[in-house]
Image (cartoon, rainbow, N blue to C red; front, side, top):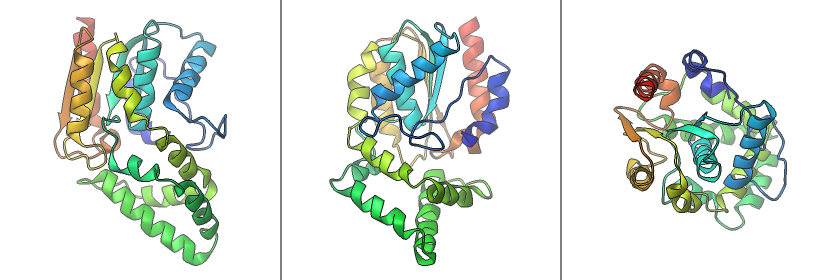
Length: 251
């Protein structure tokens, strides 16, 4: 949730924000050991919104895997979604990291690796892996100072995050996004980094074209020099795009 801090000031100027920690991906425990699918997480999102009395004309914003959840909400609950904003969202077909995480037996291997992190040597390996992964998702830009250290600390404190990611990837989350894309009825804004190494631009572009065919308004903004984490590194540029989008919608 800390990743949203650079954009939170802009978002608060345009309405109330409901942000929550996805079960199994951070500080919140998994609600179910079995199901971490996009459908289940979309149901949780809608339940939380309704709990706070938000039942219509919602703007759903999601980044990366959260974008997949946001799209699923828009497809399954079109009557409550007013606008959909997808930042570096999942594409179709699935990106390489998801295909790797879905390999048979990987969940058990990751569980064993998390036990090894308790040793000094294991911690050094974890730091090296996280540093390399973070560099890749931020490339061609650099992560903020201290970002790698915070990610390492999070994995050490909550080793179940990797198993959750593996369990989710085995459910082939990108396929339902393609299948449900024509059920979306709300205006949709896609924003994506041109140099995103994790979710290639072409895979999101194919999903955008499918969504575009079924909605009254769709827009795809491509950010120069941006990787996957542009909502952190280029927050001002994202806010500017969102500002124009809101003004256009109001007009």
